[in-house]
Length: 272
Image (cartoon, rainbow, N blue to C red):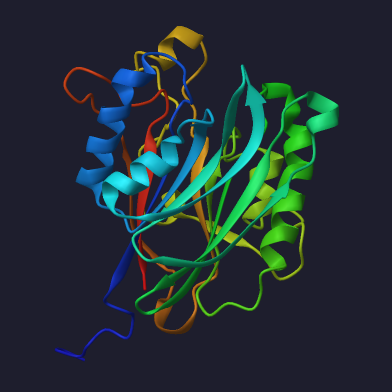
């Protein structure tokens, strides 16, 4: 009917995921470029991977303070006496948080975790999860066990009124078994828990590469372009809560001549 108001929620929450490349490359010069990009994007919830924690400082804490956000951090391993982990930053208060170690440390030497934060947003709580899976091409069998651990961790945080938001660097392409497990294209690790891929729903139909040889840091690794960073959301709730309306690749521009990271980020808008 002409003039009829849409049934779907009109308000949005902006969610960003971004791998910040630890203390690799010109990390001291990259830090202000990262912060400038985050300020410009103005996301409500930010999921970050490869966060450094050296005992005297923590990248996530520094960024959260500069943005006026709350944050939680979970360390997955230590390299050269410096922590390496994931973080969630939120414009709104974080009511609770938790983390879980994922499969694979003994088998591969890589420590990986899943991080959870219950964000107390103005229109209801949002369950947010952040992760970073094993990076080697041949570790699909490990990543499959890691996504099983992740799914069980997400499931343990029920009930929720807003669908769970799972973000991170999965180091896996969309056609991989581990990603197919999460989006219902093969057997799901947990019955009645399945996610939609924000880029598939609302991307611009380009390749959506977040690891790209257009990035001067990435090109030095001699790896192919890939889409390996994701924002995944559970099935939409009442009036489309959690439905993805926009999704863009971001963090793909230099700031004062400095690229912020070797990965590009991903920003999505969800009905909220």
